[in-house]
Amino acid sequence: MALKVDIRVPVGLPVKETADFIAECERAGFSGVGVHDHQHSGRDVFLTLALAAERTTNITLYPATTNPVTRHPMVVASMAHTLEEIAPGRIRLTVGPGYLAVGNIGRPRATLATMREAILAIRRLLRGEGVTFNGTETRLRNITETPTPVFITAAGPRMVELAGEVADGALMLVGLHPEAVGAARRRLKIGAHRAGRDLEDFQTIFITPMTVDEDGQSARRWPQQWFRPDQPYLKYPSSSNLVWLRECGLDLPDDVVPEQITDAQAIKICDAFGLFGTATECLSRLKRAATESGVEQFFIFPTHTQEGGYDMPVAEVDAFKNVIFPGLQNSLTTLGD
Image (cartoon, rainbow, N blue to C red; front, top):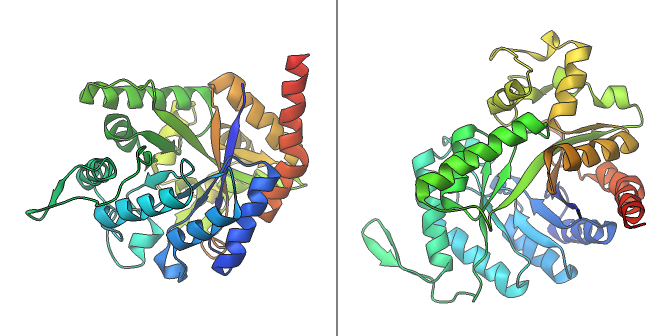
């Protein structure tokens, strides 16, 4: 089974330099790069992706993640089509309810109803169909023969169900444990059944938090730290993380704080939720996720504090380039023999 690995890259450098970094990710072996959509960074994700498209040849590019609060669905569809013209077949659109981007303009996250309306509208627009906004029917004047796939970024069970109901795919934060992955897949099927559709062509990508450190034990202290003063890592970007951990038998209270997490619990949480440890340990966990949980595509989400959210994932890229990708290739070669 050939695994695909994408990685999250922030606009932590001037856009031309960020685009150059994305090209380095392609050379390192990544299948895709998702760039966050934070207007408060002062650097636009779609312009950054356009520059990256000119510097790359095969890698899939996408915002990770845009939202229907700071960007109108018509604008999102137009930007997706524009990128599709620049890099045909290499664009993916991921849409979530919003987090830091909406918080920075004092707006709440998009509701399930808003997300449903937005995803359906964007998909119709990309197919060249008419959509009515505020009593006015409109459509895109230019479309591509094959519409850009539209994914929902989902952390909670209901959002996962919505992805199965209305989207082309899901970018899911549910962890890597077989029980959690299985529960998420059942939620996708519930949504698909509600819409009377199957998931044969549905694509699922698993958001995979990652901390790589030569001191593996230090890396596994992730659950015992704070993302920001009022929010533990364990509840970032939402407390839905606890729902999926409970599927794995890790029943933590809703009001849990990092100081209450024991070292033994931290190890179990890290093993259930992502890649935490040395590069070699991360390689081993990645392979187990593939064999035990059937995960075929990962979206590496380097852990960070709110202040460090724009640090480039240099350590993670190096770990994959020098240890993890060669290790995966060796495994495939061994299986071939």
